[in-house]
Length: 280
Image 1 (spheres, rainbow, N blue to C red):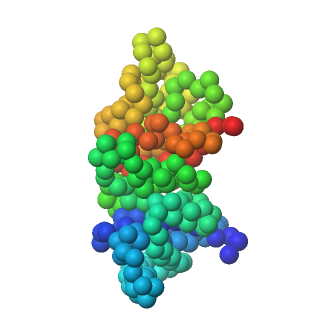
Image 2 (cartoon, rainbow, N blue to C red):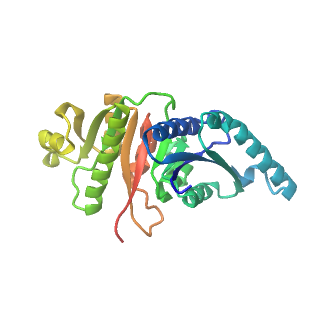
Image 3 (spheres, helix red, strand yellow):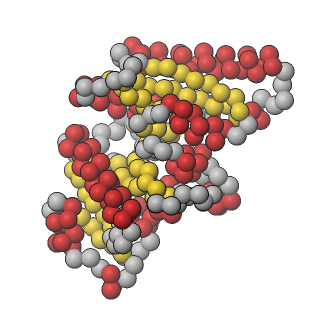
C-alpha cells in the first residue's frame, strides 16, 4: 500500500446529502486516471457523544454499528466505481478535535468536508468544525459549498500583495503553482486576485500580471480587507474554486490565518486551503 495516497472524507451525520463524498469520488477517479499512484478514500464520521447521552456501553455499541452500517450503504456505489474505500466511526464528546486527530492518523494528502453554514457571531464566540480543521490540519483542506457535480470552469487564486516575510512569499508560490496545476489539469481558466490597503500601495497591474504569468484581464487588484476582496472577486469572475493559504503562527491557540478564518462565510463557492506555518 506504499504507493497509495489517501483522501480523507468527513461525513455529516445530520444530513443525507454527503457532498464531501461525491467530491472525493470525482477527485479520486480523476487522480487515478492520470497518476502513477493510486488514491484511496478514508470515509470518516464522528458522532457527538452528547447526542446519545450517558448511555450504557451496549447503546454506544449499537449506535456505532448502526452508523457504520449506514456508511457502508453510502459507500457501496463508490466501491462499485472501482475505488478503494475504508470507513471509520467514532463517538466522542469533542468531535471537532476528533476529526483533526483522525486526519492526522491517516496521513492523508487532502481532507474534504462539506462547508458548514454558521452565523458570524457563532464563529466569533466558539470554534466550529471548519475552523478547527483549518487551524490544526497539516494537510490541505477542501471545503465543499456548491454542488459537487458542478464543473470547475474558473479557478481563483488569492495571493498576498506585499510579502516582506519569506513564509508569505512561499505561500504565494504554493498557491499559484497549485491553482495553475488544477486549472491546467481541468482545462479551467485561472484568475488571480490580491488586496491592497490604500492608494499608496496599489500594485502595478501589468507587473502583477507578468508575475502571475497571466493576461491583464485575468488578474485583479482591489483595495480593501483581503476576505472581502476575495469574496467580491470570486463573484465577479464567477469562480468555481478559490485557492488560498492558511499561514499559522506556531504555539498560539488560534493559529489559523486571519484571511482563511474570515473568508469561510464570505464565499459562495468551494474553497481549497493550503497549510503554511511561520517559523518559530
